[in-house]
Amino acid sequence: MIVTTTNAIEGRPVQEYLGLVNAQCIIGANMFKDIFAGLRDLVGGRSKTYEGVIEEAKNDALRELQDKARSLGANAIIGVDLDFETVGASGSMLMVIATGTAVRLS
Image (cartoon, rainbow, N blue to C red; front, side, top):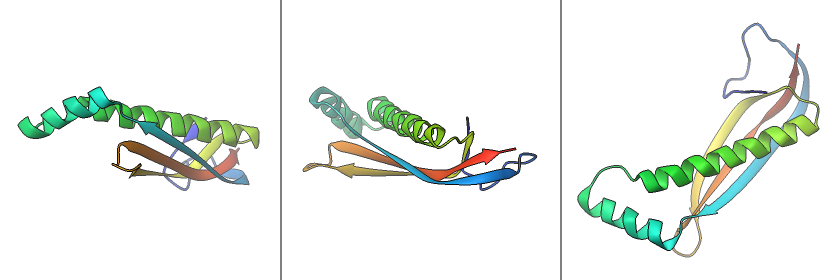
């Protein structure tokens, strides 16, 4: 399935618009990840731990988005937007929301 942030795919005109699809994923980082990420904050540099959590949440949301589009008979999702938010009492959980338009391309 083609998944793109653009509103058109060159050489593949939209045959039918099937509707808006969305998916959410909320994922928490565990206490040990929080401790190691806190240490990384003190010494500087990138936090591979949190980068991994973000990547996992993004992939889960996109996979669910594709499943929903397939159930509508789509072979592509255009205009995909990803939003990332922290949630929870201490902001220890990450929410990823994926939205797009399910379409059937010719």
